[in-house]
Length: 296
Image (cartoon, rainbow, N blue to C red; front, side, top):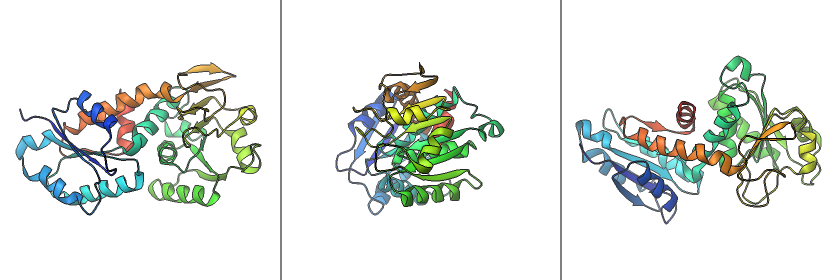
């Protein structure tokens, strides 16, 4: 049997050590790491993966696309897939900055407590994604919209929130999406205050070390059944949630911290890499990773 070769293509100058370690733990026999990858220089690297093996051995080569610049990684992923033709392709996975695996893990956690599995019942779920224009927040919103939940995307910039909603609606026709502007002051107001009061699920997916929902905001979230804070760097993204919280009962809701969903995120990450070697046609974005997480 041919050795499993994973080609790690990172848009940063230095490829991620974290992604490399997970790749080895997930069963890659050989790891080839490249930094500074762009849509303009990726094609020869892809050709090297496509044309060195044939037949069943082609399934033993796969590509992982990462990096801290999510938009850049998405462009590389798109160029890679456009380079393939016919059966001459290898498995490829996109997970820049852990955005896809983290978002998938958050939705898996929420679905343990909310009726998101069935589109009819999911339509009654109202979600608020705070920091919803960031890389993880956008994917959480997209995955929840695909489950048919109503999703409010909150940001300091209403224009950015509206643009995220527009892009998701283009991918998920009929999705219930609402852009919401977060006030510059600490006191929730306007549509953001209403979204807090109506939310069954609140996910904080903002920048590390930034509190997006303080004690006043939490007191307004009287309907919330699940709160998930994906920020692991103090201070908490949602006041009162500790990074290690996992399905912890708090104030009438169930709460998760970043490390509380981290175990599921790591399981999805490793399982996705293993999936790459099952078929050369594997193409794993956020939706495919959510499906993996749901099956774990």
